[in-house]
Image (cartoon, rainbow, N blue to C red; front, side):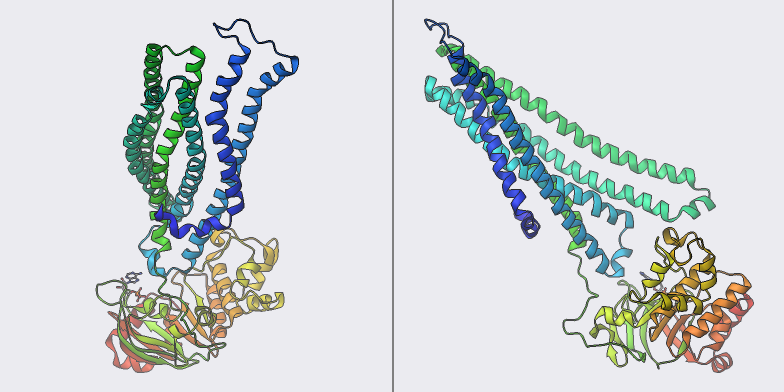
Length: 586
Ligand code: ADP
């Protein structure tokens, strides 16, 4: 149980329903464990004359009604207690589940980007949904059985012991309870088998949703390469593995009931043999057997508590992969107060490693004064994106430091830093919401007039008005109802709205029609005015017009300067530049 101690705080918010549910569980246990056997013992013999009684007891009408009502009343009260117990427990369980899921989701929001490169999205989704559910089921079942079953068992055993003792003394008690401990054996044996297989089911669920999310994120490629059948086969292999794992759990889980029932029948027959030998009367024997039967179910369920705990703990293991992952890119303890930065950017002897192998950036030392339009050029894999990613702290420098206005980026609050940076990526991410709300993401307090102005600056206003609901048009998941050029212009409108002193642009490589291209170029040059701009440049016009060019190769800046200087003096630059020009991108 100590495995779950760090999570006890989740139970605090559901204290009241939990306690009420426990009380109902105890009541349920008392009425099942002792209520029925005692009735068999006390009430029925009074009504039905036993063989040796002289004459049946004469009952008044009231007494008959009372006896007749006894059984339904016991069941009704027991039923109500059971219902309330389960209902309240489920309620508490779903509340706990909600809290755990929310914490899981919140943690995903702050984990460093590097974490997500090691994990499949589908698996992370599965952990957040299937494993949290598994945890909830474990919590509900365990809490339920830990109260109700011991209560039932204690009352039932007490009833057996009391009745048996009264009839025949200790020997009869021992005879009737002899098989109870034997029941534990199949439970332990099967429990162990289930735990391992259940963990496997959770893993397979993770792979299944991994497979599905990978497929959904590549629907275009699947069609383009004609991979439909191939993908279906891969999916089928994964579902088959899941089914196999699930059936193994079923195999053992379902074997438990018949085994327990067999053992309990054995128990009854031992009691029967003993009772026959010592000559116990039927009315004394029946209540003992009744109470004995009441013992087996709680024993079975209590035995399964351990299995449930283990299943819960396996689910927790999978959640803790996320919960325990350190958030190394976080706010500093004492952040430097920052409002609007000027935008003087500097890399001071920065080295950066993604992993243990060769650094993606080595000893990069460069100053980019405010207002500089700085083009980053170089072959693929040279380190341009990595360089740009260090500014908003998507990653932190392994050695050296990145500063803005002389302040280490790690000394500022993340929100303050990132508010001062606008990013326009090659493939702008849009959400399934209205155009206005998509723009507002970059500055939630912007007025409608400001949104429209930003859209006008980005040449987006006209096409937005042509949409059915204008700014209130919902654009579909990832903005699928828009063209590539329209998505880019919305991304630029966002950057206008943000009006941050530092702008990071990853220039789109895909070709657009000439008019859109021209509009985007115009919007860009308008957007860049007065800002410190890092631009991963693919168009030679952008490169040529930049005030400063950094040439990257193998993680190092191998040359810097303006176009004319570099073109005259640097071979690598000249080759790169001519290649871009030959590619015909204006
Ligand atoms: P560029 O933008 O110039 O194409 P990058 O900055 O993307 O280059 O990459 C620089 C180097 O770092 C490359 O060798 C690349 O393989 C490696 N790299 C980039 N991103 C990652 C990552 N997320 N994990 C591990 N290595 C990476």
